[in-house]
Length: 499
Image (cartoon, rainbow, N blue to C red; front, side):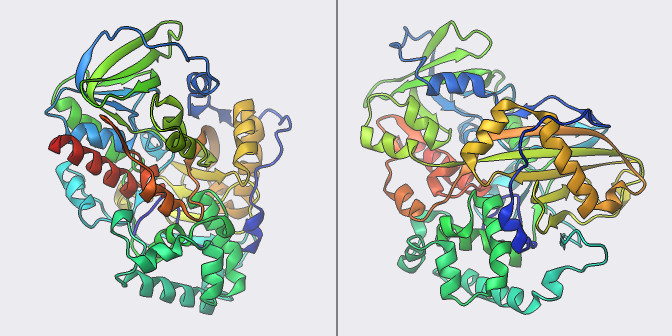
């Protein structure tokens, strides 16, 4: 089983309408509104728009391995090859990709990826080498909220029978040798057949109650970037199976994994991660050295170049296809056609005695967000702060293109106001004895790959090696998961080690 940061914990039928309100001007909020965090889109959009088409300059440096992208996959590649001359080029000011965190008054909170499920090998073996000990989130893990005072969780009431049948189906599939697994290279023929169906088609074929489809559409939107009718049944079943498994989380989410990987790399030698480095071109070589063109985001007028025996592109495929030069145009065209979801994360910081909350609270039918994670629920009860708390609120866009346009417009108050209003409705206890002091917004314009039907077949067929340039990103497994990133990193490392 795999994970992302969401669970099936129960969005109702109204949640199929999940959108963010229009970007109208909002009044001055009664809380502090922080500056944007998340994607630094300007240099990458300049590359996308063809402003960096010039020939590469003479290389100024040579390394054994250069890794383009310092997310979980890129950091894993570099950490596993730490005994070589390896350099990571990361366009942001800090590595981690979507697995980043921040701190508010000693409370660590996630900016994106928040928890894991699969602690089998090879994933647990990697965590152990990083001195990470995943602990399950304590009960209660989650709840579903209707926004109506006194209403119970529908999974325990009117949806109970249908929800139990769904769990039984997923349990049976999870125990089968034909489970749609990661790595996708080990999938059986019956599992691969699921990739040709949408999740909606598969669940209807299995006679899952129609009343659950609103819930499942919202889950798929949050976890995989689109509703069930637009998601591969292979990816959907893989992700949905986590409802039968415990979840594991670190303070600040999966940033703990990224920090541990970066620290392991740094212990082998300083200066291995170069931040603010935007890569605009990669020229593979069948023998000799690949050339990589990049520029310092603070000085975009001065292009630079280095060469490497191996280049590993640990960036989303839709972008990798734009910077690879001199390779099969059919392959790069296929990469650039892949769709990415857009996403907003709002961290709401409270002063005062916090309410007792489960780890994850789902809002049935909320228009501005899907769920809210308690940043302190991962801590032992005795270590939780008594006078402050943070809620990490996730808000995916149903229409990724419209979402990106709104994120670019950057109307922070217009994003925050409806989220806070609906938090008051769905989670009034949060405001009972505490005051909302601050809201921190994070934008992810291309948060994760949309796992459309056929995505697994596409990724199994797509070449991941172009001479001495390798692709190593979670996209390569067709599903946006920590496990996907680790598998792709290990595959690239194996090729380099053999080579």
